[in-house]
Image 1 (cartoon, rainbow, N blue to C red):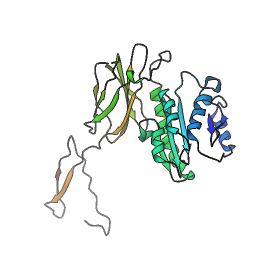
Image 2 (image 1 turned 60 degrees about the vertical axis):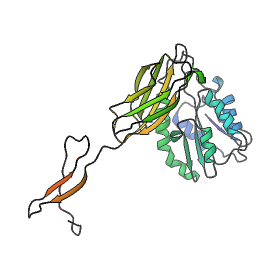
Image 3 (image 1 turned 135 degrees about the horizontal axis):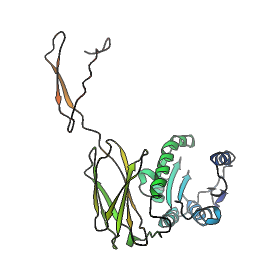
Image 4 (image 1 turned 90 degrees about the horizontal axis):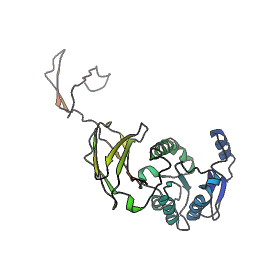
Amino acid sequence: GLSQYSSDPRTEWDLSAYSTREQVLEAVRNLRYKGGNTFTGLALTHVLEQNLKPDAGARLEAEKLVILLTDGKSQDDANLAAQTLKNLGIEIFAIGVKNADEAELRQVASEPLELTVYNVLDFPLLSSLVSKLTRVLCTRIKERSHKEPADTPVNMGPQLSPTDLKISAVTSKSMHLAWSPPPRPPKKYRVVYYPSKGGTPKEVLLEGAVSSLQLSNLTSHTEYLVSVIPVYDAAVGDGLRGVTSTLPLSSPRSLRVSELSHNSLRLSWKAAQGATHYLVLCSAAPDGAED
């Protein structure tokens, strides 16, 4: 679905309007730009009240995502409207162009901001975001839809939600997670983690009395998305989310050459931590290069 806004938001098409990618792209090509003021708070309220209703095509069991695209600072309270959406479990991505206010984008967007806030200097540069944004959106939907079955009510109240996710002791293969439990301890925690560039989500189920976890057997030099979701008998609390990259594998250091002769040389180096073998490649230097 898509709405344009200035001082008065306008629905261009609802979620139920088109059923194929080609139809959506054709609608985008025929879209006429709506100039005017920048009442972002009013626009977000319009999306909630008009575009995310069942009669506009919003399905109860489907994850709800809003992508805000703006080229200016809001002339009304965008943060209050955005918080209303987020409290209802709707995830907001904020994309700024030209004169957009970075601080406002970060206020409006959902956590983690590393994945949900983007800013470019001009409209043609939006094309540079498409690949990454598509990947992030798809993986977020995949992760969020791994929640409890649709007949489980979702309660986003602070009484049911953990806080203060800390990611520490990061190595090339592991990281440690810790969080503060909610006032009402959950029955279980679901911890979901996967590489941000795509990959099958992995899941660990913990007892509600536990509030930390060591993740092992990770891939080195890889950005991971992590979610901690509290599960109750009849509700699912708001999840904590974080993003951290594992360290690169350790490298050998201080390569030295000695005992040179007309057909041999000796190499020595400082060991790379954890290495079980080394592969040594040797080739003649190109003409003009230092031997």
